[in-house]
Length: 182
Image (cartoon, rainbow, N blue to C red; front, side):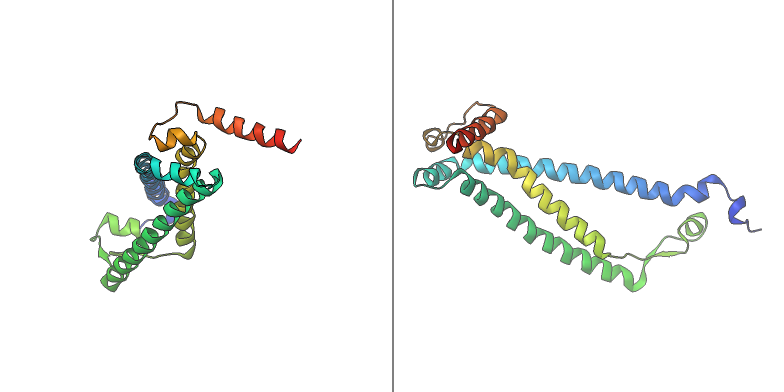
């Protein structure tokens, strides 16, 4: 005997929201892990290349140019890997959509609306993923690149990390610019 939608259990009417919530929770967790990994990798990379940035600063590159170098390097790498991931995901979705994913018959097929599930790629999801990648590129480069570009050139050339706080460095640089203009 089939039930009417209004007479169905609370579980039946809320399963799609619950599945979507847990999927989004997993996605946020995964994105946080990716962000932490990007920042850790970038810090290690910058620490290994401190002499290079010290040399660039010594020959006249500004702090902003050094920051731009780091940001553009990470942004270009992120964009290339985003393109690769998008290509792989498109191939997987195309292969899955040939026959679909069989979920079986029974309660799960009633919950999902059929015995097969088909994947989709929406343009809005592609745009969101691109924005997240660019955001991670900017956020992961922000603290390490500013720290390396705001320390003394001699410390950078000698591969020493300054122990100054980032807020102190930024406020000192900001105050110096204000006093120069006055």
